[in-house]
Length: 418
Image (cartoon, rainbow, N blue to C red; front, side):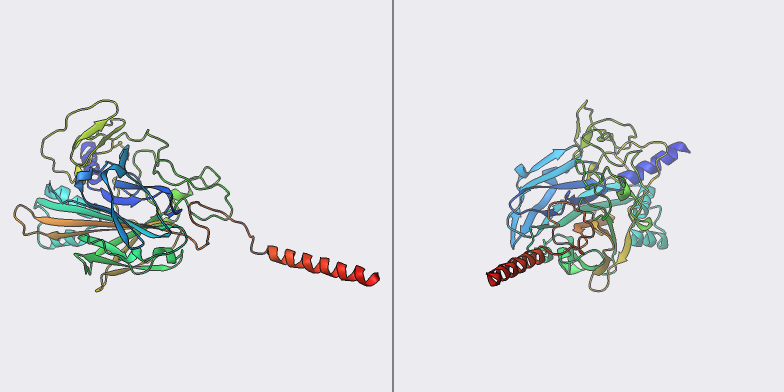
């Protein structure tokens, strides 16, 4: 029983590798150094780095100019791929990455578990209705991810540009022209055309720019980890509301401070822990302590990018990626996201269809989009902030005008006495 539970947990963990582009803060200063983090795993933790030869496109769009990312702009830290660049003039920027397609073979149960775990409900229902639950699968998959961030105060129109990816999210309004409490309509395109009747999941995480009125501790993060503070509300970001609790944890740790959390093993199907190891998407393993050869046996677990598995503990419960708002695109390929809280918002979808291509049973294209939403104050660029009830204070200009009137009155008074 215990062995079966661990195997199921391992299958679900291995099939849960979404890809996201993330920033510590989505509000940056013009002409400043910046870093975008490429996560491959969950939104909270990257399980492995992505080799550059897997990227069909990596580019940054700002003020109407699209610039290809060069190889020397990429670095790695633990299991995170880092894109280093310098911002230009003020505007709304877009960064995107699109990967080459790969094939993965899965036994029937592993494929069904993946569909349920990642919320690909339409395909799972189709397999149930057509008596295909016992059929194995060979899936061709690729991932296409974007992030929108704001540099300086001036908004530009780049947020609405299509990058030409096989699947991508396009907002219908600049996210940085909206605030917490607004609705954002987002269109999903497949090969440049609206994709209707497609499930989309939208959720958020509290950010470094998270707004507080009482707590004076500033939000911050460590090496791309979960934003948090060390004040009285130290971990309120982990459970902000009931609707947005994320009960899944990796072991007993929520985030790391430095390099100590890179402790997952990279063998396919392994549940051992090896500290400071990570994989590349070509299956190559890298360890800071020791190296071992990869197992060449065929795996039937669902692993996108040939990711390594993180160590599974006895009491770990498999989690799903279907938290937040569950939406379905209309005939225009649009969904409406309710921006109900400050934070980094992320949309994800997996478009999975049957394939008639020789040697395949299915093809999937994965898409994500991230951006940040704040409560609407003007000074948001580059830092989190707090404030107290300063709206009732007398403006400075009133004191200046009053002083001039008093001085003028005294001058006239003494002149008359003379």
